[in-house]
Length: 101
Image 1 (cartoon, helix red, strand yellow):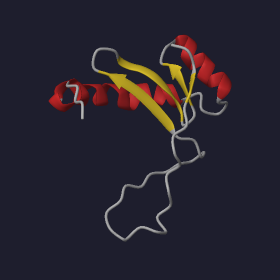
Image 2 (cartoon, helix red, strand yellow; image 1 turned 90 degrees about the vertical axis):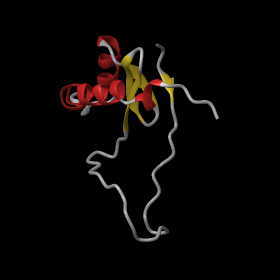
Image 3 (cartoon, helix red, strand yellow; image 1 turned 30 degrees about the vertical axis):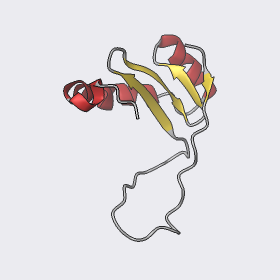
Image 4 (spheres, helix red, strand yellow; image 1 turned 180 degrees about the vertical axis):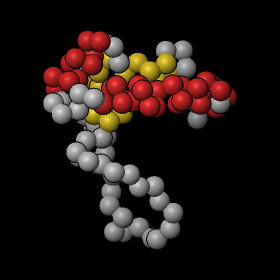
């Protein structure tokens, strides 16, 4: 898969939103990471808010070269999150159907 440029919108602040339930998380370095999964392929891509790499040896090396300081990101994801999320997605029927609106 060739490297593609992405541009996800920034997450707006809470200043203009009413109080209520929210999801919060630590964002230590200012970088958003994403992981790409499909039912037939499993985890096949990952990257930052603005780029995507293959989730293979070359893609990981390219990601590490482009994002010094985040070299552990792929192994942390793979070790802690990939298998439980894959299992959740495989076992939940909503993730293995295609819906067109």
